[in-house]
Structure formats: C-alpha cells, structure tokens
Length: 61
Image (cartoon, rainbow, N blue to C red):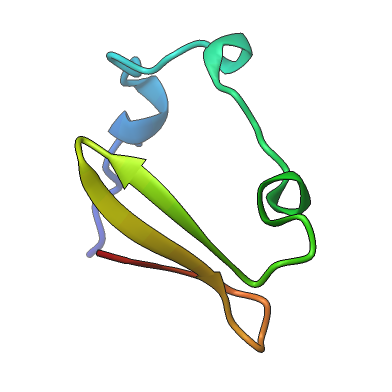
C-alpha cells in the first residue's frame, strides 16, 4: 500500500533568495565580444572563462 506524502517543497518559502529584479543578467556576447576566451580577476585570482566548440562555458582557475 502506498502512502502519499505532502509536497513540502512547494510549501516551503525560499530563504535568502534575491528578488528577480536584483539579479543582473549579462549576455555572453557582450562579455566575449567575438573572442572565445576571457580572463576574470576575482579576489586577486585570475580565472579563464572559455566557450567550447559545442557552445558551452568552462571556467578554470
């Protein structure tokens, strides 16, 4: 016999989630501008963000 459980995920409020209006969305084309790779400095460390041949993004430290 199967017992149904209430869907608690739908009822639980999201905590510490920023409002949608607070999240910046950047287009990858604006970041890369015709290049396939860019460097990003974060906390003094350089990261490489690359577009693969399949169009996916890879971030390396």
